[in-house]
Length: 259
Image 1 (cartoon, rainbow, N blue to C red):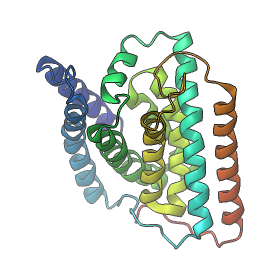
Image 2 (spheres, rainbow, N blue to C red):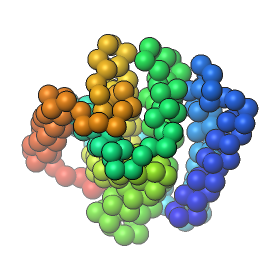
Image 3 (cartoon, rainbow, N blue to C red):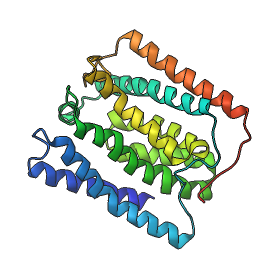
Image 4 (tube, rainbow, N blue to C red):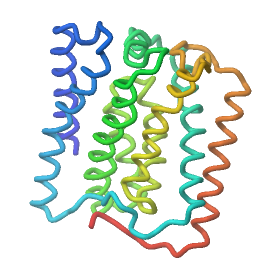
C-alpha cells in the first residue's frame, strides 16, 4: 500500500506539473484539466492494485451492499454526510488560521467558481469520489481488513487517505472523513462511501451556487464559520449518525470483507 501511495503521489505531482506548464489551471477549463489529471494519476495505480489483488487472491470490497439496508439507514448516511461536509469545511478553514494555505485558496477558487460549473460538478462529485473510493476503500481497505482486522484497517486506510492529500488543510479533514467512509462500507458497500464522499465535496458547492456563500465553509476564506451553520452541520451529522446506529442495532450484522 505504501508503494502504491508513493506512486500515486508521484503521478499526481507529474500530472499537476504538466497541466500547470500547459496553462490548464489558469483558464475557465481548469476543473476539466484537474479531472483529467486525477484520472491519469489514479488509472495506473488502480491497475496495479487490481493486479496485485488477483495475484494474492484478495478481492476488493464490492460496490453493492453485502445485504439490503433499510431506507432509514441510507437517510442517516445522507444526513450525516451533509452535516459532515459543513463541519469538515469549517475544520479546514480553521486549520488555515494556524497554517497559511499557500495558494490553495486561489487554486480551489479556480476549480470551484461561484457560478454553476459542470466541470466542477464532474470533478468533485464524480471523478474524485470514484477514483479515491476505488483505491482507498476498495483495494486498500479490503486488503488491510484481511491482514489486520476491521478497526486497524479503518484507521490505517484513513491515515493513508490523509497523507495522499499532501497538506494539513485537506489531510486532517480527510483523516476524519476516511474513518467515516471506511466504517460505512461493510453495511452499504462502496456505493455508500461514494455517495457520502460526493456529498462531502459537492454540498458546499451547491450552497454556493444557490447563493449561500458561507465564510469559512464554501468561500475558501480562513475564518471561523458563523455559529448557525456550524450548529446546523453538527446537528445533521449527529442526527444522521444516531439514526444510522439505531437502524444498525435492529438488523443482523453480517460480516463482509474483500470478497
